[in-house]
Image (tube, rainbow, N blue to C red; front, side, top):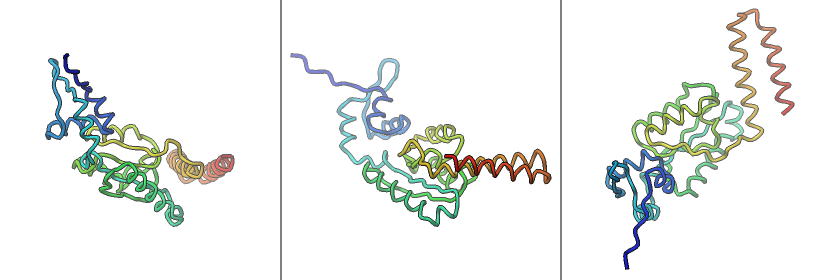
Length: 213
């Protein structure tokens, strides 16, 4: 009776099962943390037994998470929103078995590309000190351009894990404020100091839109 052949997974399938980015799995293979075979064309195939072995371990090097929280205003921070975000995300990480290596919390607009907290995340990714960025909603990282940020992290083997897909209604107030900031900036560039009346009308319109939500 012939012995049953063991199943082997392609790189992306094995990474999906383990919950890590393919770049991370390649690094583990180079470091000898997981064994694989090579096809005649040079592609990696990971034995099922190796994947199951890692699933049974704590995987500290593959579950290093950085919790990122952000609010737009001092009023939100003072109301405890930032702290509650942190508590919810830390509880989520503990439930998933992640090792929390850092908590990055900041106050600032999602339109601001020069936030210190975001810059710190980029630095941690470049230095290979984390495997996951855990956020509550996509817009916590950036109001626009989330896909570009995600690509940057993926290039360093870091995955963004979004806990909730849709933001609650109360966070839509931030979007209104961000849109108001954009319109005010453009009106100032287009019309200069004489645009005060225009900006007032924009604010009134945005306030009406917020009430209608």
